[in-house]
Length: 202
Image (cartoon, rainbow, N blue to C red):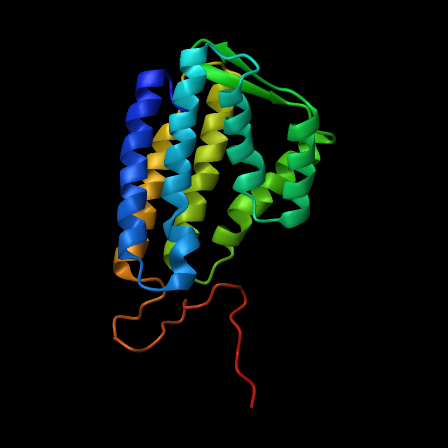
């Protein structure tokens, strides 16, 4: 989230461009979901530019913003199904508050849902065996804390800045090669998607 429609449009364009580069430079098909993350973040910023231009309210742009933020980003299937149901049956409201936008999504057990959302979106990164992905998770976690504090003060929304930093980190991760030990043809110690790393038993 950014502080104006122009800022969201600019940030979304740049972040989407970084995402295109990440996808084009990815070396392994299994790394594509992480490499494509900036595309999703950039699209999110562009959708919010439309929310700004609409002046908030219960419109298609507000629902699209919540659709990306809630059921798309989390990979946890049951959690995503619950949120998708709530979005289909209850209105999503957006309210412009000074230099930030407050989104109202009527979901049951909101604190539990928020905790699950943060765990689903940040937990896998923070527990990864890849140092670059752990750094990305740490930056996003810090960004969530800072943005939440500033949003409660109804000050400028700063998530677009953290989305940009995260996109640059993903680009570095793609260019370096995930889990690379520096020697071609061999997997590094972090070349595992799940933690703890799997071992081959014979």
